[in-house]
Image (spheres, rainbow, N blue to C red):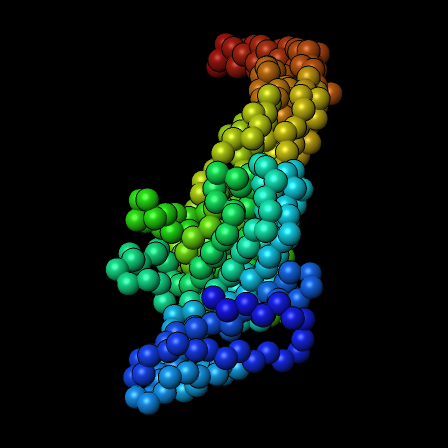
Length: 340
């Protein structure tokens, strides 16, 4: 490692002791007074058969580029326990935009380096979903035993989400677990969006290789997250994967207002009625019971103002008249036969 601590715009480093006809790999890290650093990525050059030394000013020298496409770093003089340390990533081609960490104990001269990779390391298993970007976060002095909390903010282009038939909620950040040799999905949530990007945040227990992916959900959605419905006397809400009961109504769940109705005023299929209210329908007395009109009593002679009417007097007179008329006709017929 060659260190030039001068805070100047241009650096020039002379490298000596090189072997002839050999390929050398290098990267350049440049930092400002605040400890914000950027890395060039990995470059290479090959010495000629007669060359014993060379000079590098940060150009690639025509060599091949490694898997680190772009990278940036940050060095802190000290991170105090219980305080937040923030690393902002300004390089536009790196999906991670911010890393916020808390430590369990004071750490002096810690360093983070975030690199965008062209691919995952050889023989590493493929992560789930459609990869958007491979990343690596290296650290000095920030191992899991000193980390209390790590929050990573990243972004994904809207055009990429649409082109891959994904949804906003299908984006996940995966971290590679070296000890298990597998990828683990981190807790990821949507934060905001602008005209070009959708921004997310994720919690991680530490640093390693990462991949931003989109999980293509092929399952048909049962319901939309937050949607509500009435299911009998239960009010239910969709949690994104299915229906869950959020409230049990004592009397009835109103499918129009998606709320519980109380006993005194319940909407029924024929209108609004109050419990205990009565009305007439034909010869029947109807009573409102739990929001529904039910037959309370069938009247023999009719119903009026919610009560049965008594036997009408005109009916008795009409029967007497009919009987009298029959008697008169009988007498006339009798005397007619006698005269003959």
